[in-house]
Image (cartoon, rainbow, N blue to C red):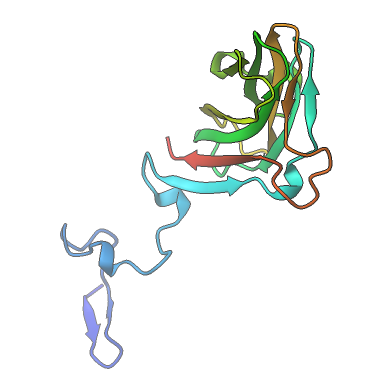
Length: 188
């Protein structure tokens, strides 16, 4: 097919895919949102989801060495099965007894059985009881599928004899209750 330029509509027909030389089309020539998630290269953030106030539950207490709900979760559906998923956030915490340490981690299906102890964070009370603090947490893995899942904060008392509390209020209502979770999907 011959290359034809229609001067009245400024349209070129007959141009094969890849027919323009390198450097002809640059970033400012691409229409807004013309490059879709599947076309973005490695390292590109293709999705970000933030937990809502309703996904922050009431105050939880942890006085056993078994992981249970930390009172914060976020549903997420990956776009690609081989993406890297990064989960990060913070939670308000309080430990009522010196020499007691809490362990905080993420479960990719919000169950205690899948809490990732290799990526956990610890926080402890050493002469600073009766003070609230924020504990940061981070977790990453390969998505593995495009199935919907719910990431959940899991917490336990790691050592000591005290109680580890998470979340400011027993009935948070419409507030985030001292915690938040952010999930990013990145092209591998």
